[in-house]
Image 1 (cartoon, rainbow, N blue to C red):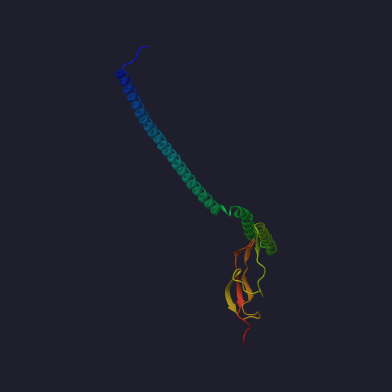
Image 2 (image 1 turned 135 degrees about the vertical axis):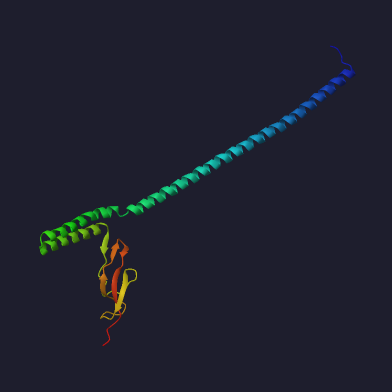
Length: 193
């Protein structure tokens, strides 16, 4: 084996140091580049996630707008056609009234006409009862109730002041809701002589 001179050893050591230093610098640069690559990847990932979330929000907003429009359309249809079933059921009553009026022209039997009108009345009452509409109980002698009654006049009567003394037009309830207030005359107290 051949022995190396001092200069050769020094050159080899310098070369080794240079290679080692270059290697370390390259490692530092490459780790810096890796950090940049990792940072770019993280930035790209965050941008992609942001874009995905933005798209999700836009889709949800569009879905909400479609839902709002559909609900509004259904509400309008409900308002427009809410009475369709009831009106369809009222058509036979209209037919019966038409036939009753025609029968008066053809023959003038009052009893037949009256019984026809009574049948129409009963059919109409039954129709309203099936729709949960009922006439309010007779309010005469009862205290005036602003939730059920509509006072059209006040006059002296034998009833105490503030009580209903006459019924001008009956009121109707639909289940527990007032459909039409009863038009009543209230008592103004005992008549003065």
